[in-house]
Amino acid sequence: MAGSLTKAEEGTAAAVDWSDEAVIYVNGVRRVLPNGLAHLTLLQYLRDIGLRGTKLGCGEGGCGACTVMISCYDRTTKESQHFAINACLAPLYSFEGMHIITIEGVGDRQRGLHPVQERLAEAHGSQCGFCTPGFVMSMYALLRSSKRPPTEEQIEDSLAGNLCRCTGYRPIIDAFRVFAKTDDSFYTGSPSENANGQAICPSTGKPCSCRNETDVGADESSLLSSVKTYLPCSYNEIDGNAYSEKELIFPPELQLRKYMPLKLNGFNGVRWYRPLKLEQLLHLKSCYPDAKLIIGNSEVGVETKFKNAQYKVMISVTHVPELHTLRVEEDGLQIGSAVRLAQLQKFLKEVIAERGSHETSSCQAILGQLKWFAGTQVRNVASVGGNICTASPISDLNPLWMATRAKFQIIDVNNNVRTTVAKDFFLGYREVDLEADEILLSVILPWTRPFEYVKEFKQAHRREDDIALVNAGMRVHVTEAEGNWIVSDVSIVYGGVAAVPLTAAKTEKFLVGKKLDNGLLDETFNLLKEDIPLAENAPGGMVEFRSSLTLSFFFKFFLYVTHEMNIKGLSNERFDAANMSAIQSYTRPVTVGTQDYELVGQGSAVGQPMVHTSAMLQVLSVV
Ligand SMILES: NC(=O)C1=CN([C@@H]2O[C@H](COP(=O)(O)OP(=O)(O)OC[C@H]3O[C@@H](n4cnc5c(N)ncnc54)[C@H](O)[C@@H]3O)[C@@H](O)[C@H]2O)C=CC1
Ligand SMILES: O=c1[nH]c(=O)c2nc[nH]c2[nH]1
View 1 (cartoon, rainbow, N blue to C red):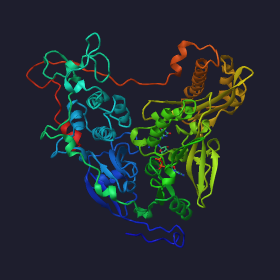
View 2: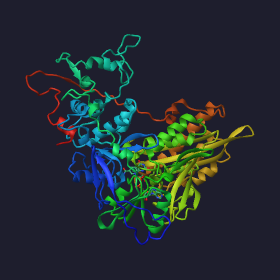
View 3: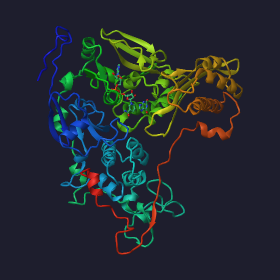
View 4: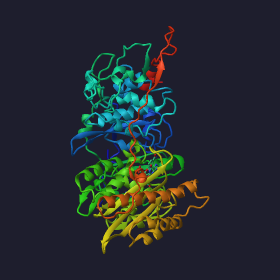
């Protein structure tokens, strides 16, 4: 049904036939969304229609209890794509034309448990059950989106946005480890052996004894490990059918459905638009200069829920192709502002694999930082432009855009494009160089030159899914002059230390023209302390610690560059082997944990590793 045009929209070239018909599928069931729900999140809607298995935890995208799987159809590749998201921040209408699968769509009492649910229950992976549907959905989305069985690392990464506060992560990870099919022998019952005849663990690739522990019928009086329940779960025990036969498919109607520009309303006069063309977006922005652009809503959602922000007009720009550019160009990469962070990760990996390493030092640093940016569910929706324009003082990427000499392309409502350097874009606390009639179009990330090194830094209370205490982006370019390799250009930018990312200007000036050697360090540290002052009462506290981080990040950068230059024979600066760990990027081995307990046969359930009676219900999220 076509929506009527407002006065402001009348008589313009971009007048559009806006539709107010919004169709989604939820667990295979077609649902026409009524107009008037623009103020609702997906989570509120799901719970309103009786699907209460998806939980409201923190409500700000941090705990994963509200995880659901979204499927959409890529008309270019003709494939459906699946990803886990947090329903608590997701604006309902953003999913028009998509399929939402909730915990109820994965398994239920009639169809039985999905193997993911079955594993979690059997491996004692639920206790109070509140976070359980979120874990199931993250694992389910990973399996549905993986062409090959995921690795154990991928499984753990996919759970970084899910918090558990009672069961503990060991049994949860143990439960899901079986889906990391790394060795067929694990499934055939004849594990491979090394030259010494020791069994090789199919999961870790190291000698172990887990094959014995898969023998459920082993002597019960012996010491047993909880990993004994590692059995493949390829079928459902209720009726013996392969579970894949019951997997919800992407609805054929949605494959064929034509996207329409949408105009819908919400409570209290809220208006929600989904333009399909840049021209439509710019026209809306000219009619409503105060309109809020929305992509992932992971910042705007927090502002409206917790900071009393009210936005009357919201423009969802997820379907504007010009904002989704991901292009390799002669001078670097062009990255559209609406590109999701997970898409950017995938793209950067491809670019790094294809191009020479000297060109992609910036790409590697950004990819390195994205690994620790929030959790999977947030990265699946949050966008490059959303992070830049939020201009959060702790943004993980903004110091890097500045340090890498990135440029931002900005377009106004009259289609004029201007380019500014990232370094000049952040004006004050959450204030950027954008006029009311302008939007961010894209980011241009230049290739690095030979002998140019870029590195990312972040320190948080915990590595996964946490905001930075201090972060930084650093870059140096060295060139040869009279037989010496000297600094020709350097960028040192810190986040988390001021209202905007802060450039260490005096330090940069000092370093230019110098040969990087240990003798420079004392003076550099003194200048850094002047450049990055942290007052005793600075917001965020822990000033001594944060101050020392600014120095230690630089020291690590210095070591990294020195080491790289030594390898290339450009320098013979002393490199103390004890400092090696400072330059190695942190890689956490997959989690390994065992639990040993003695079974005391006293004729009762006490002391027996029995699955508790609520487990089957908790993994279905019906309790
Ligand atoms: N809730 C959470 O757990 C987390 C939230 N974040 C935040 O989420 C944001 C990520 O992006 P989204 O979810 O996509 O943001 P969003 O849809 O919430 O938009 C964020 C801000 O950017 C503006 N914006 C977005 N694109 C724009 C463009 N092209 N031109 C001008 N302004 C534009 C929006 O109007 C809004 O003010 C980051 O800024 C970060 O601060 C990041 C990690 C975790
Ligand atoms: O750049 C960011 N990185 C994060 O991890 C994060 N969490 C909330 N907001 C954030 N911004």
